[in-house]
Image 1 (cartoon, protein in one colour):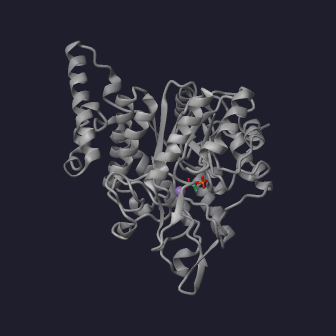
Image 2: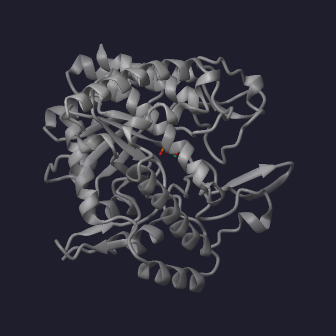
Image 3: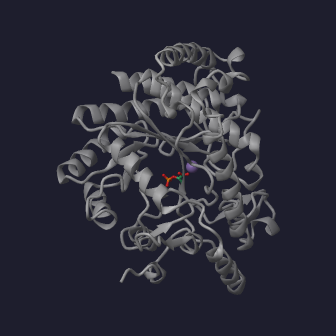
Length: 441
Ligand code: PEP
Ligand code: MN
């Protein structure tokens, strides 16, 4: 008998201190009655797509905010993010000629692990912000108090965002004949936008050619889009774990794919235990201290039957370490014969605080880590399966450098993230061109 509750007896890192157990329990009861956000069959399809990426037949583009907010669940914010993701995917599909698996770090990314449980500002110490699913970003005692009712809001915001994504993906907006429209508000001011416009014109010509040949496949008109987030809050995830009536297998129905973060992937802790029981495709973040034995033990826990597409390792080594730390991991895992999709997160190993106090990242470091990731996989003849990034569709000023040369002194203009710094739209598009170039080499 599968024991979906076995995680409850184990240590779980990074869980909020809810103050009122009765309220938490009534919230969890309510959540467990709410409809699934995704269906088991969809999760299985994504698993097939990730298996293709593992075999080298496609490339994963996974991204979105570090932390989504309830206030960000608006049509325009979601549309901007999706538009940027679609533009990046088109660049990769056309320039690198590889099918792209589009996965949003969206519709559920509402909980954050923190390096410290508290935050001190001007001599006042309060609980750290743990994501909108737990407490408020505003630095007041009232807002920082964990509130279980927020879990219900996280569910409804996820539903709203996922509904928008599904509508944009299938309702005509993601039609490849819209390649120019996605760029309209952008091209005039941006070199990346101009490069994109050039590529979009080529796509137009290719589409016109296909139409003239009377060969226009349905794939041109819609895209497949998948949701993902870090499965951090086990109470929430567990209330949204359901047994699929078709197969009797349990699935997380909060997102198509969930991942376990670098801070919660201990082998004998609750997160891996819970994840081992569900059938969704899983990601696990691996930082620079990961040993090959750690990676092999995670594989043994999460994918003992070597199911293709089940397990994605999202490596986040840092630009200065990726070339030293990644080769041995990839080599040993590959030698074990385990099917693993390798995805590069070039964000989390490259964060630093600027002298002005902003948490930031250099676009050059991000490019460099992705370059190192490709070099390592090319040298070992394994497949660089994708990238996992933090970005937004708006012109924020959170990461420094890039084609536009954003300076540390510019960070204050539009520093809007509630957690880690995100690539803005043009930096994201620059990255897509860069990755396409690496892919073609
Ligand atoms: C994140 O993805 O925002 C995150 C906290 O990552 P990691 O688990 O790699 O530190
Ligand atoms: Mn982050």
